[in-house]
Length: 388
Image 1 (cartoon, rainbow, N blue to C red):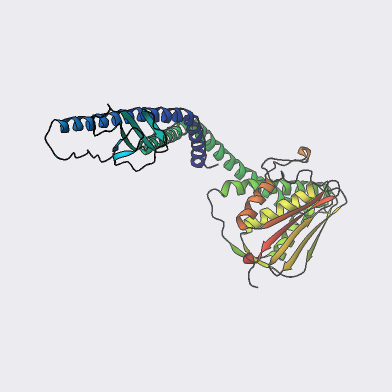
Image 2 (tube, rainbow, N blue to C red):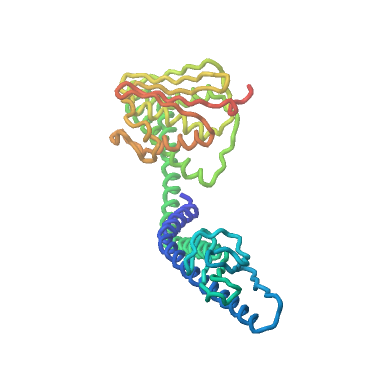
């Protein structure tokens, strides 16, 4: 597992959780700030109304022929009769409520102040209004939320990294132990296989030695799966041209002793020579895990059919057995999942196969009947085929 991606993923999840929790108090804060803004705006409207009245009173004390009605950048005002007909107004917004006081009408707000009769140009009401915008409040709320999210995310990464240090050291030691163990396991397995072959050349074949060799090949397949998992994190697997039918024959011959222990026959049906551009290690993991599982879950004295067919848009590689079948086909690719624990293994083989075919865009179709057997069909696209 990549520690960095793991830390980022969990930090994001924790940050998302915190952000959701904060939405309620932020919403309350926003509603409160909007009400405060409304009160402040009402006071501003009243203040501008007093400024206009002050100017009108000052006009009455001056000997001037005309009155210049005060104009403001953000506020509009007007003088209205008793029936709210405009004597003079700068307000363009239609108003619905003419009762004295503060009113909100959509995004427009206005304040109606009653005036003494026949004192200010025969006007009965002074109305002052303006457009109300909450954009600054929304910006503040967003800024607060973003700042908290960034702070929580960075803090989460910091603490996750600190908390994970002991586990990282343990994992590193465990990785070194597994790598060293894998190396130590491979050496005796190779020695056993070589010595069995040497013994069989000089002596009659022994069923006991066949069992030993079959067991070592089963162990070798598990070893190869573990080795692939370790190396795939740090190694690039180079693509090469592979004669698929010949490669299949070699892998089937490798499993003859393993199949022979259960008296299982393996047949290979090929309609033509097919070359593919693929990595041999990855291809071996696909073929070996399918053959190993087919043998493991097949009944004694049964047969396994391996077929390779060519199509216009690629080719199909199939593994058919007469075994116990699969109860949960949708789960067999989960790591460590095993339908029958008594059959052995670690449950990692098909998980590796799924990773490989997904990377290569190889389609897999599974057909299985419980008690009758299973067929795994791999559809290899034409882009992976090599010109002969």
